Image (cartoon, rainbow, N blue to C red; front, top):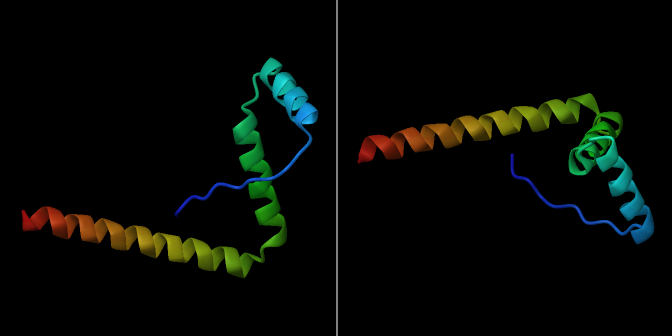
Length: 75
C-alpha cells in the first residue's frame, strides 16, 4: 500500500518533552505515533471498509508481483 506523510501542528515545547521522555523509556516516538493512528483507524473506520481496503491492497500487491514476473520472463 502506498504510504503518505502526515503533518500536524503541535506545541514545540510539548513535543520536545515528549521526545525526551519517550527516549528515556526506550520508546520509538515515530512508531508510537504510527500505532496511535492505527488505533484511530481501527476505532473509526467501519470493518466493511477496512476489509475492502485490505482486499484492494492484496489485489494490487498480487498484480504488481505478476507484472514483475512477466517482465523478468521477457528478458
